[in-house]
Amino acid sequence: MRISLDTNVLAYAEGTNGEAMRDRAMEMVRRLPQGNICIPVQVLGELFNVLVLKAKRKRARARAAVLNWSAAYSRIETSPVVMANAIDLAADHGLSIWDSVVLSASAEAECRLLLSEDMQTGLNWNGVTVVNPFAANLHPMLVALLKASS
Image (cartoon, rainbow, N blue to C red; front, side, top):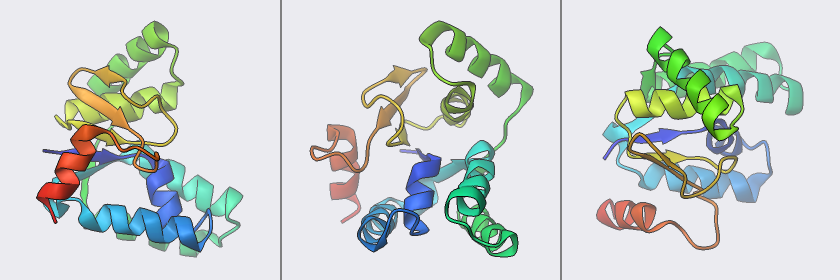
């Protein structure tokens, strides 16, 4: 099962929300089947912004973090089809255009799960289910995935 990661998962893994959340995010990512993780390029751009603007990292250090994530996992391009679908998704479902790009890209890459704290858990669009990996009660699909990789 392919899994897509949203910006907050990577930002937390980078320590933007304290050590406890960093450890939790890193543990989650480590437990996922590594060959099945995808990152939309939109997320990489958003991560750079978060690291520079919110975490106040120097641009070179933020770039290094983004390049490390980019090298570690498959990337999902923001193609014209992804953007067109994202616009429809934003118009039809009231999501921000940037969340729509992430969800649309995840669907284009045939991901079954999008791990995101920012979008509505349980939202399913074109075969992708949004799941909050930091919720008190994890979604059954994520629980099964984590059990299978243990």
